[in-house]
Image (cartoon, rainbow, N blue to C red; front, side, top):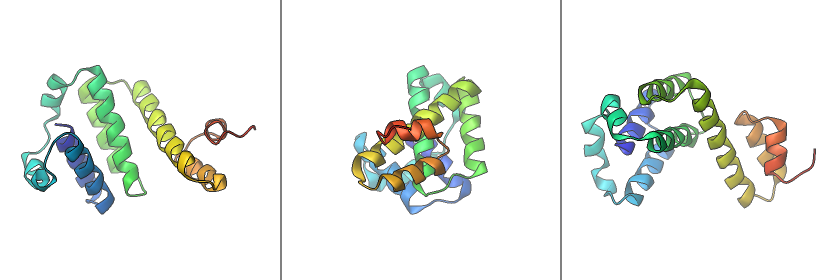
Length: 145
């Protein structure tokens, strides 16, 4: 169900190679055969079924995965953000909690980048591009402000 939701989200503003690769990696990591991804996409995503299947933890993990996906192509469109809002509402996640999940996702992405890049200026630029405040960026780059 996660992958069908991610594919539904990716299709909102046109499928991008990086988005497809991320879903393929997730699908393979959960035991799926990446060659079956197209057939999975054809099944579509039913938010009402997801709401019945997901508990709170699963819903939040799904929404975090959605945010990771929309950053995979280097941009996040209004349409993608609106779709994630629809998912959250359908899964019973409040707007304030959704914002927290978005913040956690952006922090996670920046922390992973900071751990692999020695160019901390570039990490700070990405943090700004992700919309993180200066304190969060400095905390993740282990600098004092």
